[in-house]
Amino acid sequence: MKRKLALWIRILLIGLSITAFMVGTAVAQGDQGFTETFDDTQLQGWEHAPEVVVTEGVLRIGPAQFAARPGAWQDYTLSLKLRYTGEGESNINYRATDQGSYLLILGQGTVTLLKAAPQSEAKELGRAETGAVNTSDWISVQIVLAGGTHTISINGETLINATDSDPLGPGGVVFLSLGQRTTELDDVSLQPASAEAVPGAVEPAAPLAAPTVTPTAQTTAAGSWQDFLRSLSAPQGSTFQADVFVINLLLAVFTSFILSRVYIYWGGSLSNRRKFAASFMLVTITTTFIILVVRSSVALSLGLVGALSIIRFRAAIKEPEELAYLFFAISLGIGLGDNQRVVTLISLAVVVIIIGLARLLRQTQADVNLHLSVSSHGSEKATLEQVMDAVGRHTEKLRLLRYDETPEALEMSFVVEFRHISNLNQAREALKALSPTLQVSFLDNKGIW
Image 1 (cartoon, rainbow, N blue to C red):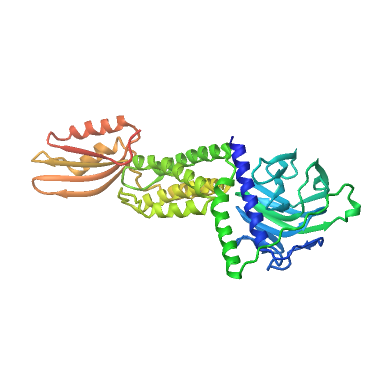
Image 2 (cartoon, rainbow, N blue to C red; image 1 turned 135 degrees about the vertical axis):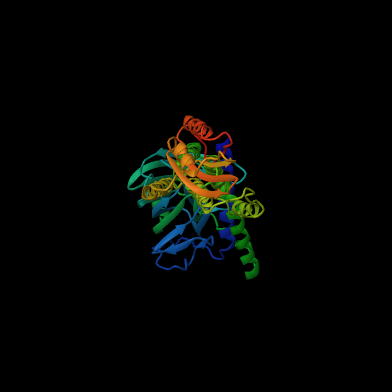
């Protein structure tokens, strides 16, 4: 069911793109072919989305973008070089008119040839499994049309040889980039074949006449199409990949767990570090999910900005270190949501190493997990030396923060590090043995194992 829905959406996008560049074209190309090396950044003779650009002699088509070469070609040889980055599909539509087109889909490990027409289900003419398209290097694509016969070759190897008993009429060529894929083209060449050289060739139909429009109306139609394509094609044209989604969520759990352990044991905040670190996992997973959803949709991204403008953290951030860790947890979610796994894991490793080294350089400082307050009253009040000696025998770290003494009372505040709950009980008993008037108060900082 999902496959059929995606197929119908693809057909709709193809029909809209074909209609758009047919409206914007006043003169058909006839039997003349073309060779394009993209030395001219102006893209003369092309219809394309605003984000499609020529960079370093290469035509770059971003996600959910299109580039079209209008014309009325029937039988020809179409050759080009193609490479891509990102997940998704690279589509080549040929004999493309508003009556339909042939659609060559270069996916992940597969090459598929479809015949798409409005108001009807797409027909699969051929499919081939190949590893030739699973590369970030340039690949050579060749499409040979002779009547109803289609010969598709990748890097000189023929993958699909199909025949359509009811071939489509002449049309142009449209290149689409769907999902998260960015497609690059170079050395595009279309060389028509003579009618005599094609046995059983179908007589080319007359090209569709372009409607007479004013320049203002033409610009409005093109702009409306481009806006509609950007809002419609990205989220619906993307192929959901459950394995990628699950892997990224699992990595979000793993990285947030590592970050929480680092904060608990190596952080310097005096607040409850264990309680605060528990939120890292939820923050990272939530951010990963949000970015996975909105990364291919401009409309959803703008909606997210509006939503975040009215959502604020109501919990007080007491120290800059808390904000830094929280921001890094969000960054982990953004990186994994955008499928940048290597960069995210490397960044986490670098941060852990830096924090670890900083920890070694400040070993003399107390890494505390409790605040200890001791007060003693009357003539039998304990001394500072007695309290520090009694507590110091059972703690890993002990640091005096405050000392107040009057003739009637003595008050002291410490930050201490207990490794086990039994150490706390031993320290409490030792303090009680000093004086019957002694009052002890422990305030948790990050919890005790």
